[in-house]
Amino acid sequence: MSKEEFSFGYLLAGAIAISLLLLILFLFVKMLDTVYLSWFKRPAWVHFYLVKKKLPQHQKALLRKNSKFYRNLSATDKKRFEHRVYRFINTKDFISRDGFLLNDEKKLQIAATAIMLTFGMRKYLLPILEKIIIYPEAFYSTVDERFHKGEFNPKLKALVLSWKDFEEGYSIENDNLNLGIHEFTHAIHLNSIRRNDTASVVFTDGFRELLSLLKNEQVAMSIKNSDFIRDYAFTNEFEFLAVVVENFIESPKEFQRQFPVLYKKIQQMFNFRFAGY
Image 1: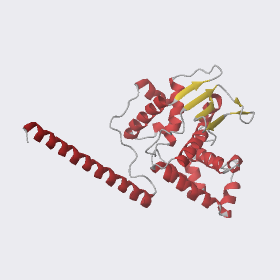
Image 2: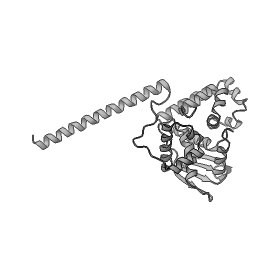
Image 3: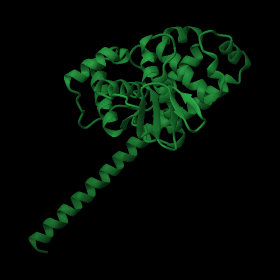
Image 4: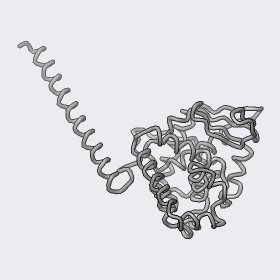
C-alpha cells in the first residue's frame, strides 16, 4: 500500500467514525428530547443558535418602546428575542395594501407579536405562514363578502391585518382585546395541526386536554358566566383558544386567579415560563 493510499484510507476511516459518532449523538439527543417531553410535557431545550442575529440599536429601542413583553425579559432572553425577530422579519413577506405606509417600526411590532407567542417553542418561524398583508383599516374579504379586521388564510399562507385595529389592540394593555395576538394564535394552532415537531406535539396534545376540560359542565358554565372571557370565545373551539390567549397575555394574574387550571393549560401549550408568566 502506497503512502497516498494509506493516508486516504486513514482519512476515510476517520470520516466514517466521526459520522457514526454524530449519528449516535443525534439519536441520543432525540431520544432524550422525546423522554423529557413525555415526562414534563415540554421540550428539553428551546434556544440554541450557532450565531445570534443582532438588531441595530434603533430597532432595539423600538422594541423597548412598543413591547412590554420584551421589556420584561431577562438580558439573555432579550438577545434571543431579538434574534428571532430578525429571522421572522427576514423570512416573511410584508405586503401593504390600499396605500398603507409600511416601515421598520410596524414590521417590528407585528414580528414581536409572533415571537412573543412562540418564544417557548423551539421552532418558531411557522412554515404555514409566508405573507403578512396589512391594510390601513378594516378590509373587504371576497371569501365571505364581509369586512374584516383580521384573518388567517392557510391556503394562501397569509395573515391579513387592519393596522388601525392591530394598533388599538396594544393601546390598552389589559382590555383582553388584541387583534395581533388573536390572529397569530390561529396561525400557530393550524401550524401545529399540520406538523409533528416538539412544539406542535405539546400544543396539539394540550389543546385536546383543553377541550376535555371544557366538557366538564361546571368548568364550562363558570367560564361562560364570567365577565372575564368575552362571548365571542364560544363561537367555536378555534375562536375559544384565540380569545383565551388574548386574556392570558394581557391579564395573566387575573386569569390565573379566576381560572388556575385553564391558565396552567395555556401556559403548558405555549411553554410560557418567562417574563412573569
